[in-house]
Length: 197
Image (tube, rainbow, N blue to C red; front, top):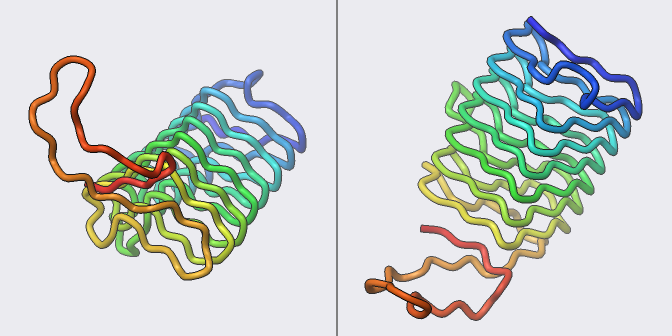
């Protein structure tokens, strides 16, 4: 077992980068903490858990019995992968930025969960990919911004978003003919559209 618990403003870049088979969370970040290029594997709670205003870059969380990434307020999660966690792939509260993450096969435990679950206001989800989860992106609060995401093959819904949010168009593109060279495909009017397929 390799558990990492960081004090406020500490960086896991100077610590061992694998946290596996812990009886609680794998990696704990304090306020303003930073984790980069770390892996949490098969932990008995969340893979990563943060206090406020932490940042997580290019990390992986797999096979946790709770969330892959459980983050509080004002946290940045960028370029991360959450796979086969029994809870949500990423669970976020207010004023977070979730960008360029991939969430696959999360939330398939006794209690069903989303690839990305947003539980409080003013969080931004941009250019994430969700697939094979129970819900792709689930937003339970208001005043969030959801754009540029791709969601496919999630069992209950690709997007489940309450009223009162800013959501770019959700587009289900028609299949195209064969493409070879520099043109083809289906035109898209909204550069910030969310896609399902």
